[in-house]
Image 1 (tube, one colour):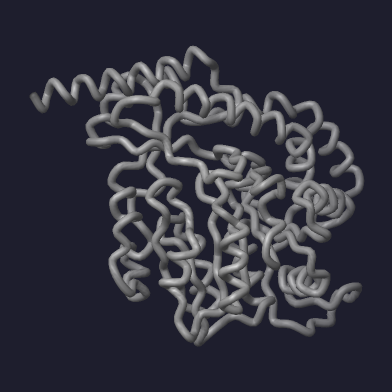
Image 2 (cartoon, helix red, strand yellow):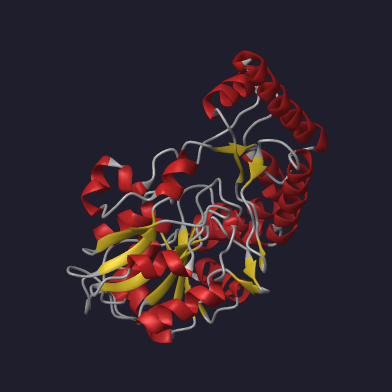
Length: 375
């Protein structure tokens, strides 16, 4: 049975761009360039321009984007990379795959994003890089974090997998520090029809390195010369067609998400439920609409029974995951507490006002039932 309110609706976005995608596919089928080629190059140029960077390099997925950045930057065994613990595990996974050690940091209790103080607490003599995660599509104080990284001599990497189009003081995600990474997983604000990702940077040499590394370490212009030990992480032309079609609508879709979050905020202005805060100076894109909810399990069960889909991002902080416990230096109380409370509410550009109202009413009703139960 279809839910009354789905968590997301990818078909609504697909329907809006279907004609453009079909035209792009016709061109793609005719030219026969299924990997790389002009459709990939056109998307890379458009994505670099959108992010305000000189270069974009399409890769197979967002995890590869981070790993390739670390490899191209010479970060590996013996090096530490600071990562917020309340991220999807891929942020830390890429560090380990590059041979380095993740150094987990806690976050702001209001925004659930990295702060300069949290970064400074995590720095050791072995720390070489900092991955700033724009969680849920929101950006932290990038000016302060850039200053902190510069003082400590750290490479600043943006993990903007959830933040396509987000800005800090008018400047887009991916354009701070030396380099940024993106995922275009289908559910993202800008999503492909499968896995896809990109690296963006103003550094021409770094972009050149990553182009080589993503393609088996090949020398540009040669098929059989390999100067680097690379991997196979190329952006398929098919996905570039989809991404180019959707990119033209991204700003409108992001604006729709902002309007929807404003409705959520108004509905929960007073009471125990509160949405995760925005950093002043940031303009988010709300990949997820995340609230902190008391007795989350009971509330989520009630919403599910009413036909409203929700999610939890993320129920286990990285430093508490079995595979990463060996990298945990100490408890991280803010992230641990948030993991028990966060609930992702339905969020997609085509969500209707009446559906938002149903969700908000259902949350209030679930909490009222909870209060009666406790009494």
